[in-house]
Image 1 (tube, helix red, strand yellow):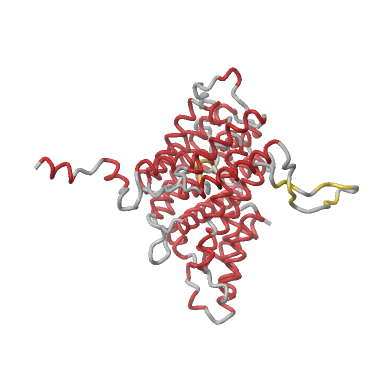
Image 2: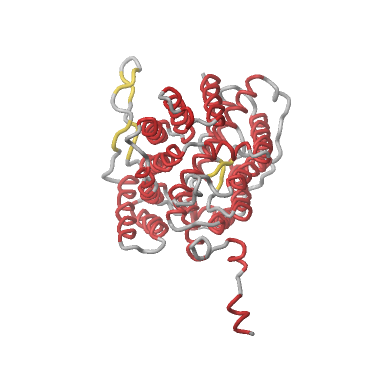
Length: 453
C-alpha cells in the first residue's frame, strides 16, 4: 500500500502546472523564468527613466515597475498557466510621457487615469471574449509570420541596444537627413564588442547543447564586461537596498479632463497598441513553441489577456503606464519554458530585484543582447510553414515580418499584414477566407491610422 501511495503521489507543482503533460520539469521551468527575467530586467531602469521625464518620482517608479510586473506575471502563471512575463511596456511608456504629458500638456495624473480606464475596458472586453475573438480571427499565415517578425524585432532590439547596430542618419547643412537609416556601430571596443563576444559564447554553448545556455551566456558576458569597463559594479559593492516608497505616485488620478476629445483619442490609441502588442506576443511565441492548438489558436488566450488587463489596471493604481506581455518571454520559451511555473519564476526574480536592485541593474544590455539575437533566430522557424507560392498569403506574411523591426512596433506589423490580407483576398476572389471579425478588425485598423494622422 505504501508503495502504491508513493507511486501515485503528485507533487503540488505537478498539480498546479501540469509539468509532465507539457513535457517539462520544474528545474527547466525555473531556469527558463530566470532567463526571461534577465532579458527584460532592463525595464526596471528604462521605465522609471522614461516616465520620470513627466516629473514623476524616479524611486517610486522603480517600485511601481517591479510590483506591477510581479502581480501581472503571477496572475499569468497561476491563472493562465502560460510561460509569459508582463511589465510596463516599451512604447506605451514613451507615448505616456512624451506625447500625452509633454506633448499635449496633460498632467501625469491625468495620463494615469487614462491608463486606469484602459485597464477597466480591457477587463470588460476580456470578460465578454472580445479580445479572444480578435486573437482567434487572425489568419494562420499572419500568425506564423508574427513569430518570424517578432524574431527579427527582438534580435534588432539586442543589436541596437548593445550598439552593434546604430542610427546611421545625421544632419547636414540645412538640416536635411543624409546617410543610411542604420549602420554598424563601433564594434572594436566597449558594449558592441562585448555583445559580439557574448553571441559567440552563447552560440557555442547552444551548439554544445548546454542546458541553460542562454542564462549562462548572460552571466559569463556580464563577468567579462567587468574588466572591459562595460559592466559597472555598484558603488561600494552594495547590492542590498530597501525599495523606494510608492507614496509620491500611488493612486494619483485626475478625472477632470477625462471626457475631452483629445483624451478619448489617447484612450483609443492606448487600447489599440496594447491589444495588438499583446496579441502579437502571445501568438508569435506560442507558434514558435508549438503551443497553438489544431485550429491555430492560443491556449487559454482569455486567461492570458485577463492577466494583461489586471496588470494594466493595477499598474495605474501603483503609478505606472500600460502593463503588457513581454516579447522577451520568447527567451524563456526558447530555454524550455512551457508552463506558468516559468512566469512564476520570473515574478520571483522581480521580487528579489526589489531588494537587490543594484545587482540586477549592473547587468549591461550588451550581456542580454546575445540571448535576444539567438532567440530571434529560434523565432524564425515557423516561416517555413508559410505558403509563398500564394501571393495572397505571402505578401501579408512578408509585410508582417519586415514591418515589425522596421517600424519598431509589433502592432504596426500586424496592422499592415491584416489589411493586406483582407484586401488581397477580397479582390482576388477569395472572400470566403475573410471572416466578419477580420473585416471589423481591419476597419478598426483604418480608424486607428486616421485618428493618429
